[in-house]
Structure formats: structure tokens, C-alpha cells
Amino acid sequence: MAEVELRKAFKRYGDAEVIHGVDMKLPSGEFIVFVGPSGCGKSTLLRMIAGLEEISEGSIHIKGRDVTTVEAVDRGIAMVFQSYALYPHMTVGENMGFGLRMGGADKAEIDQKVNHAAKTLQLDKLLDRKPKNLSGGQRQRVAIGRAIVRNPDVFLFDEPLSNLDAELRVEMRLRIAQLHNELNATMIYVTHDQVEAMTMADKIVVLRAGYVEQIGSPLELYHHPDNLFVAGFIGSPRMNFIDVTVREGTTTQAVVELPGGTTGTIQVDASRATPGSKATLGIRPEDAGGDVGDFNLPIAVDVAERLGGSTYLYGQCGGMEHFVVQRPGIDASKHGDTIDLNIPASSCYLFDSEGLAYHRTTTSGKQNAA
Image (cartoon, rainbow, N blue to C red; front, side, top):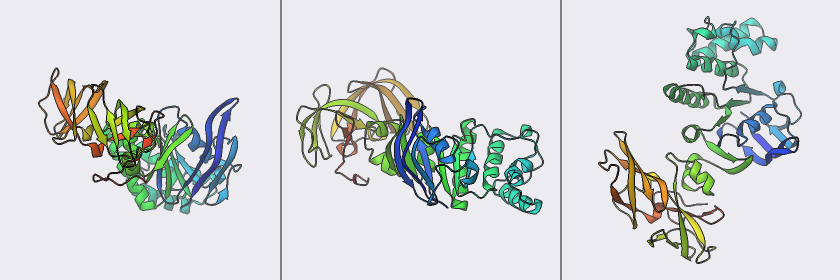
């Protein structure tokens, strides 16, 4: 296990700065996920940690050692790529043991480590096959096995499941999570899929345009996003946003006016809000589909998706064209219907005109904001 720390890390390509002074300490033994939209810098940041991208300014420390200028091979890391990067002319066993052979390990040690990793990943019956005779999931497990046999201080995963179909992604997601529990190793995982991040991570690092927007556990980010970007990125389907006007703000609540003149009292610390200021009301789809609420909003239904255990309604609500509501079970609503939504004030979020969150002051089954 090893702690990873970045101190004011910058990455520039000529005059273009793509990573902007990132400071963060990633605890030893945790599963950390870098998540964000395409182009946000998550893979670049991972490659900087790996030593595959030269850092322009700042420093990187692994296990307390400054590795900023240390070659990738000497950093004590192992990386799993999206493309598997297997040698087609080698067998599964040869691919898994290749790094050890290049490092001068003897055959007995290589066989012992390869066999142990293969058994862990259920590849022990496939050691003599070539990559062309494997499924996508099996190839990815070989790539992971190649990392395991090196016994690294830190595992790095760069979108390893992107090439797999939906069913295999779920299977491999579980496999990697189980592997983390078994190895108790520090793992840093890059993905653009927030569902992967929510289900796998001990800690999530949300990135946007080369900046860290927020770091926290999955439920901390879900219940207490620092800003509009994090609120909209964490959660599936994404949070609904409605433009509102603050009429009154105190340390315990905000009275807001919604489109159409409806008012609602939101339980947040809005002491910094100015009466008449613009704000954004956030409502998660799963919080809008109940039978009891503190205020009502009508939604004109455009599309209903019935999934058996739940129904998603999409429509126009509060001036938002693609408002989403999640209702339990089978809902009979259809295109053209207008229904009233009961919105619990304790489940709502509020963001100021700069997109920063007003911290919630209610628990409502959720933790108070820090």
C-alpha cells in the first residue's frame, strides 16, 4: 500500500495549460476514482502519476518518496490500459509474466506469481491460450493479471472497461472491486462513467477542465455537492435544475420563487443570499416522484420509460424542457398528460448565481453538510 500525493501539479503543452496546480493527497489502500467529462484532464493526471507524462511544475510523491523525476519503471506502479496492450504472439501466461522476465526474475518465481494471479482472476485454465482466442473481458483480466504479478505499490487503471459491452462492464466492475478488497492495495481508476465511480470508489475526485472540483466519498458528493457541476455530474439520471429568485434568506432557510409564481421554502444556509438575487433550485429525479411534498410543480409529460421496477417520466417543468422524474413501479402517465409533482423541501438543493451550493441545514435521512 502507498499514499499518493500531488503538490501544485501543472501540465502544459506549449502555452496551453491543461492541469492547473492540482493539490491532493490520496490515502494508502483506498480505491480512488478520477471522474469527469471527456477532455477534463483525468487521463493526463493519471499518466503524470505514472511517469508517462512529464510534469511541468510541482511534484508527485508515492509512498512518501518524491518521484517527480523518477522513470515510470522505477515508481512502483503498474498500469492497466483501455486497449489491453497484450502481445498477440504470446500466451496468457507469457503476457502476464512478461514484466517479470524483463526484470530478470527466475522461472520459478514467475510461474508462482503468474499462477497465483491467474487463479485469483479465474484465468488458470486459459494460460496457454493466445489473446485472439479470448473474450474482451478475459483479455482485460489478463492485463490486470500482468499488473498484479508485479506487486506494485499503486495500481493505475485508465478507463479499462470502455471497450466492453454493458454486461461485461458490470462483471468486470465487480471483479475489480473484489480484487481491491483482496489485495488491499492503493488503486487509482479513471472513468467518464459516474455510475462506475459511485459503485466502486472509496473516494471520488471530480475534475473539470484541469481543475479539481470536489473530492469526497460517493455519498458525500451525492448528498452534498459543492457546486452545480458536481451536482449535475454525480447521480443518474442527473439532477434537475430550475431557475429561481431568492425572496428571503436566513441561516436555516431560503424562500424562493419558481417560474409561474410558486414559492417554496428550502432548508439551506442562505444567509449570504440577497433578496431578489438569482439562484438555481436542484431536484433529483428520485426526490420528485413521491406522494407527499411541501410544494407542487406541474410537469407536462413528453415521454414515459417503464422499466418494471421503476418508471422515468420526461417532460417540461418549471421552465426546464427535459425535467426527469423517477417513480417506483409502473406509472400510467403518458405523453400529453400533465401531473402535479409533490416536492419535499428537505430534498431540494440551492445554488447561487455563481453555481456554488448553499449548504443544506436538514438531515432528511441524509448527513448534514460539513
